[in-house]
Image 1: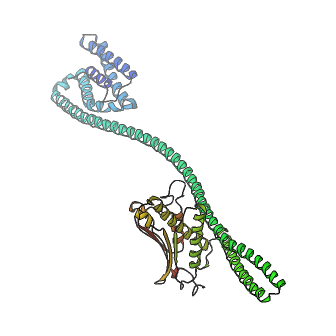
Image 2: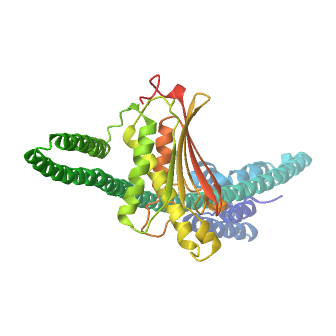
Image 3: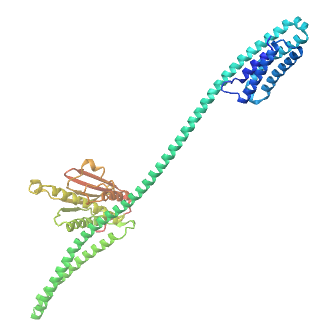
Length: 466
């Protein structure tokens, strides 16, 4: 039979040990150490022969000590994890106390029923072993849960770190994207400004060529007006002399000549007037409003203006040009200023192509001698569609760049000779009128630009005025 003091020592050693990762505080360890010292002292007193009174007091003290251990363990939250130890030893404690009481107070009764007491002690030990196994399993489960909790905590910590890193990366990337967005917006604004400037430059270049052509065109009728005016003055002087000489018949003939001269002056004056009116019409601000327009007259006018404008800028420039206009072409509603610029761009490009080809040919070679630069503008009405073509026998367009010629700012002309917007703007003008714009070219031989305008998308008159 275990004495209560030995049980107290065993319990106190067990209670002060950690349970897994759960540590007992230093204050409780100190109290348990005091309890162990007291239990050892009481056990020594129990083993050494002492007066009966001292032995009785020591026994009572042992009972009180083990009762205190049980009470404290079950009552204080700090020792909550040690309750299993008390529950395992509680039957042995109770049986040991009862046995000691009967041995001290009723030895005969104990001796008579000692087998029952031994059986109770055996069951108490079995209970303790079972509880120890259960506690060991619980401890193992607790350890597993603790490991899982640590792993989960570690995962949460790693997740939090990754989250913080991700947030930092997102902030950095957002700041970078914001900076890029601001930079791109700045670049877009600069591109828009540059585009506006280039479009303006292209329009001014077209206007400059137009003005040069107009000046050259006006010069011709003015020369006729001046020449016929001088001739008429000479005829008037001659007529006055004939009248004074009495040659009235000859004077009448001179009058007829002067009349013809005045008619020619009026004709060429009207020609100059129409050129000036056309210049005013095409130089005014484009309202974008469509008006009934004779495309034949427009093609004729701008072909001549383009040719004379280039001749005014370069006296060495020379080329044939032809017009094949369909007299049955109806007037249609278009933006006349835009179509004038469109034809001017195409014809300018055609004259540039033939002049470039001529400049590259050896004038002493057979090909150089036989080559005659030619630009041809034709109009026709086919299958309820108006077709306008501008053809040249120039240097042609290489296949490698054929798909790029309508792109904004793309140009095959030397630096400073073009903005790269002429064909792009021309393409937009045709598309804005619901038409189609095509190009066919044989490199080194010819190029043909074709504008197709469906009549069902254009308002028209019954027939062009003659």
